[in-house]
Amino acid sequence: MCGRFIITDTAPDLAAMFDAPHEGENLPEPSWNIKPTEQILIVVESAKSGSVVRRLESARWSLVPSFSTELALGYPTFNARAETAAEKATFRASVASGRALIPATGYFEWHTVGTEKTPYFVHSDDGLPLAFAGLYSWWRNPVLAADDPARWVLTATILTTDADGPLRGLHDRMPVVLPEECWDQWLDPHTVGDQALVDAAVDASREPSAALRFHQVAPVTGNGPELIEPVGARTGG
Image (cartoon, rainbow, N blue to C red; front, side, top):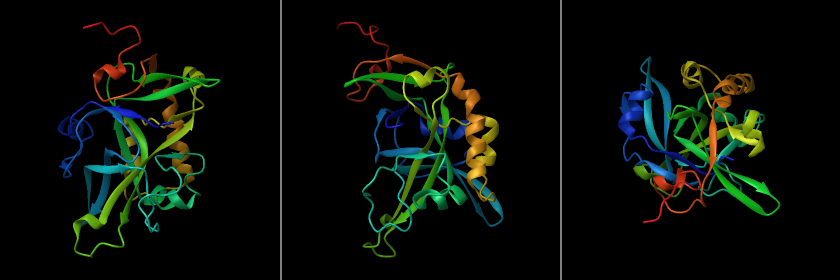
């Protein structure tokens, strides 16, 4: 968790919703089945020439720390445990100065009983996009020339925490969902992040997380709006 999520809003709509006046290049289209290592939309802030700029960018979903010599790591980094993110070498620098919001219409979770896994779709109660607390990192490809624009790869991860309320019955982990009043502080590039900041984000996520709803869906294959329809809602053609 969280290993699959969806975003059905367009980049311009999300830029307006998150008050991000700058939109990056090659932003991904809406998708109902986003997988790790695919491109996702993230909201970040940077301080340039004394002013703070909020941007909507495309990032590879699986964070790669700047010290890595390879883009493909030997361990999964599409999620980061909130409880230990500030102390782990992979995520520590990003907690300090590489925090992001990751827009999501909702996410898939699989409830496991024995060997049987049943998929569910988790979403807000009002249908509006969620803002997952995330981290980002720029990775430089050491084999590409210094003037090659492809040498820099923006990567990101979603913070997770212990599941709370009814969601605990689905899975023991869930993404950290930040309420709007916490967005500015989380993104602020002038704030040096630490474990206390992450813990505060987790605490703030409890209220919006309690409002999440979920329903069972059919096996998650392909990519289309039918993936989030409740089981039994589909009709034959």
